[in-house]
Image (cartoon, rainbow, N blue to C red; front, side, top):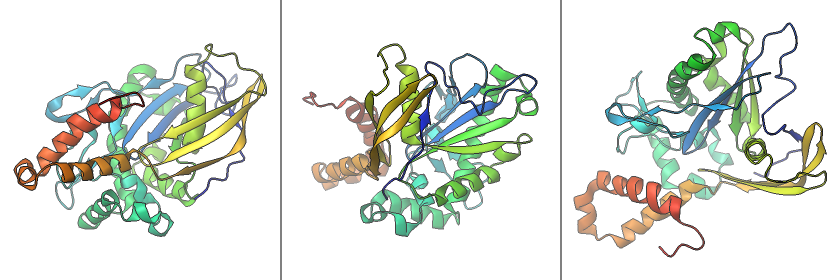
Length: 324
C-alpha cells in the first residue's frame, strides 16, 4: 500500500494557521478540533482560528479507581462487559482482561488490503474475534470510542472557550490517518463520527483529514520554531513511527512567506509499528518464562509485566546506546 501524495503542506510556525480556517471581519472564528486516532493511543487538541495562542491539548484522562492522568493521549482500547453494553470502559479505565478490544483501528481496513503478517498477527485475530463476539462492526466500535473521548474532551474545551461553544462557533474536525491507507477508510471514519453524534453538534460542522506525516510536519515546525534557520531549498526527513504504521517522507521548504513545504522524495510506509514490538516481546516472555511460572502468573500477571515492565519501562527507555 504505497502512498501517493502530491499535496503541498503548509505551516506557519510558531502557531498553526490555515487560511481556510482563519476568521475574517464579520464572520465568527472556527473552532478547529484535531482528533489523532492511533492504533495504540489517541488524543484530542483544539484551537480557535484567528487567535494567536498555542494549540491546547485534552488531558486528565480517566483511569481505574477514579484516578486521572495528565498524559496527552489515552489508550485506543474499549471494553464491553456484555453484548449490548451501552456504557463500555475505555482508555486507561479498561481492566487487564482478555476481552479488552485493542488495535481495532486496523480493522477499518478491508482484510484483503492488510499484509499477511498483519492479518495473521495475534492482535488482529483477537480484535476480530471480539468484534464477532459483541456483534459489532469496526465503524460501530470506533463510534463508541469517539462518544467516550468526546464526552471527556467537551468539558475541557468548554472551560476554555465557553459553555455554549457548539452554538457559538462553527466546528471543524481534523482527523489524522496513515498516509498509506486506502481512501475508503475516510468514509468509514466519517460514518463513525456521524454515529457518535459529532457531526450534529453545530450547524455547518466540517470534517477533513490530514495524513499523519503531514500532521507531524506541522507539529515539528511549530515546536522547533526558532531553533533552526529555515531557508528556501532546505530538505528535512519526517519519520512518523506509530503504534500500527510507520511512514517516512522527505519535504523541501518552497517558500517562507507564506511558509510552504512540498514533498521532495516520494514517501513510503508500512504496517510495522510498535504493536509488532509488543507481540515480539510477548513471544519472548513465552520462551523465557517456564510453563509452570506462566500458569501461576495467568493472563493478568503477563499483562502486568507488559504494562509495568515493558510499556512503561523497557520499551520507552531502550535506545541505541542502552546496555539493558
